[in-house]
Image 1 (cartoon, one colour):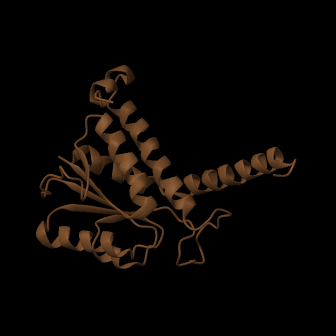
Image 2 (cartoon, helix red, strand yellow):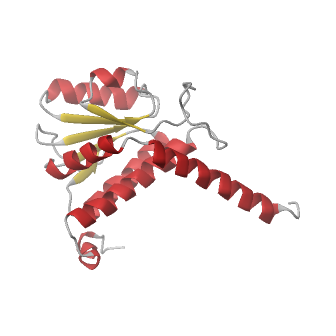
Length: 193
């Protein structure tokens, strides 16, 4: 380790935070508002993604559950039946990841009247023909589209970080909209930990 580790760390922090700031600022707020409305009117909210995207979505799922929203991720052992009153949130930067894409197709086939939202970067993926609308986080993916925000971070880290932060930001806005008491949210938190 060099003696400049501290300076390198601060420089990297600044770069990552700058990327996140530019990314969060670039997301269409009308699509975020529509997503929030869909979450609030759904009986249940389901999430599907793979890899690190799934990890971010699982965190968002858990946070919504802390708000008293019935939230699940596809594949969990206690996953309930998906109905026309529910919302499926598909996380895929490229919009072409096999498992999320096929789950979205199946949801549309099995429950045609359901609502499906794609959170991703590629507006021209196959998802556009399946989902009701898209929340675009326009950051670099494996597609390297011309208008994607570039990143100094490996692979799609910026997408996964932004996805998590968007979920937490919307959760905070839902708390304010529903005038929930922060202290009362602990009633939804696990207590066998």
